[in-house]
Structures are given as structure tokens and as C-alpha cells.
Length: 432
Image (cartoon, rainbow, N blue to C red; front, side, top):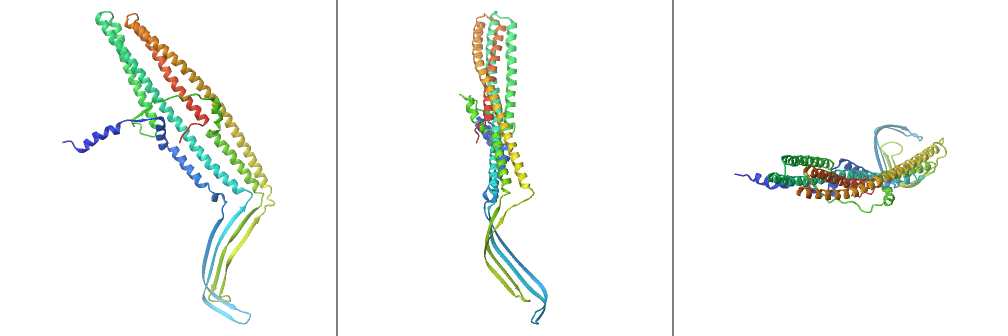
């Protein structure tokens, strides 16, 4: 008797084991959800956002409630000017102090604004770090995804060659049967089919290995079944000027620009230390002191208060001046660093553009070459069918066609990879 568990397994097993067909965007989304570095940077961004608020920069007043109540057991011995003497042991006193106060630093030379700007820059840099991680991850996933697609294209090519070899074998077998071909041609045709079957098995292994690499980037188990959608297309009408105009979006350049802004805030803070600071205070206080013995048995006062504290730095041994000079030098260093990174990125963009143009030109040449070799192969196949070409000639024509088609496939993916590198340098890879 077949159990219900076995029936359920038979129903669900094909669903579980079937490979998921993914587009490049879907594959990237899986990688994004599973990537540990991305999760860490998302958490860092949340920390930076939590830290970026007005209160953390010192722009808001601070309100404090203080309550203190002290009891004391003591002995007292007093002689007053009127001759009265007080001697008592075990007297009790209670001192209660409470106040509610607000302190607001309304001016400190602009240090508050400099600190708030630094908090904003820290949050922005966290956003940029996350964007950079996503773009780098997309480029890695795209490379692995395209490698699977390239290997699958090669498999189709090898399968087509096998079909041609099998057709040629059938033709040679018929010729041997009627006596128009010798055993040598038959052996060569059989050898071609056998070798091609081995090549296909090797190609299938290459596909499995490429899928393992893709699963690794997706943070999935290596054995996870996966299929890709092969509707890959090239971008049209790419312009170098447009990419140059978008270069400011490159994460490295954005971080360098923010670091320069950050140095300017340290300049402002160093300069503000020479300026006065003003703090306003207001609140309400209550004080009560009572005792069971002594001259003063009860003392109580309460009421509102208001005041200010003005601090003016006059001289501190030129420390502030030196700090300001150091901040200026640090700003100059950040400016030099920004210009260095920008120049390097401009050079890298130009280099990647030349790679892209060369890859595109080679692809166009390989398309024409593949078309020519296919036409040549068709002619040789026709001649072979008519007995006007030897098996050696048809094999050579097929080899030439295979090499040309292989180069065409490789050149197509070279263009696509060069295209991705261009977008990566320009910082225009669109990721969620």
C-alpha cells in the first residue's frame, strides 16, 4: 500500500526541484536580499540616520528635573546671645531641594551648525556606501549571469555542430553502402560525432560550474537549480559626453566631495572657538529645610528664575589659531584628494570607453565573418553532398565556421561587459 506521504512527495518533488528562471534584475534582487555586506551597510545607514537630528547637534534646549531629599539624625548643643542654651540628642532635619530648569545655548560661534552639517554628511556617506555596494554587486552578478548565458550559447553552437556531424555520418554510411565512399571517411565521420558528444558533455559541465558561481553571488546553495532568461540586448546610442556629464554620480567622487565639505565644517568649528557663546537659562526651584531642634526650625523658598551665561574667550596661548590653520590645511588635502580621484575616474572612463568601442567594432566584424563562414560552410556541404568535396574539406569548413561563431558569441558578451564597466565607472547603474 502506497502511503499518503509518498504521494505528496511525488506531487511536490517536481515543483521543488524545478529550476527557477530568472532575469538579470531578479537575480540581482536575490543577491541584494542575501548579501551580508549589503545588510551591514543598510544597518550602518540606519545608525547614521538615527544620529542625524537637531538634538544631537545641540540645537535644542535641554530640560532637566532635579530632586534631592536628605534626612539627618544629629545631636545639637547651642548657646544663644540671650543666654538660652539648647542641648539635644537625636534631632532630625530634612532638606528638600527640587528644580525644573531649561538651558539653551543660543549662540556658540556656529559650532552647532557645523556639527549638524557633519551629521548630515555622515548620513549621506552611508547612503553612498550602500549605493556603491549595490552597484558593485550588480556588476558582479551581471558578469556571472552573462557567463552562464555565454556558455549556454556555446552549448547551442556545439549541439548544432553535432547535428551536422550526425547528418554527415548518415550520408557517409549511405555512400559506403553503395560503394562510393571508403571506410576511412566512415571512421572520420564516426570520430567527429563521438568527439562532438564529448565536447557537449564538457560544455554542459562548464554551464553547471557557471551556475555554481552565480549561486555563490546570490548567496544560495551551490546545488540550487537555476535557469536564466537569455533575452540579453545591448544598449544603443551610448555617448561619451553623456557619461562624462554623469561622472559626478560616481560613489568615489561623491564621498570625496562630501569629505571636502566635512573638512570645511571643521574649519568653521575651529574658527568659532574664538567667538563668544551665550546660554539662556530659565526654570522653577523649590527648597525646604526643616529641623526638630536648633535656631532655625523651618526655612522654605520657591519661585521661578531666569538668567544667562556669556563666555568670551580672550587668550589661550594661540591654540585656537593653530587649530584653525590645521583645519585649513586638512581642507586643502581633501581638495587635492578630490581632484586626484576625479582625474583618475576621467582617465578610467576614457579607457573603458575605448575598450567599449573596440569591443563593439570587433563584434560587428565577427558578425560579418560568421555570416561569410556560414555561407562557405553551406557551399561546402552542398559540394560534399554532390561528391565534389572530400570529408577533410568539409571538416575544415566546419571548423572555420565553429571558430568564427564562437568568436561572435564571445565578442557579443565582451561588448555587454564593457558596457557594464562603463556604467559602473560613470556611476549610472540604476539599482533599487
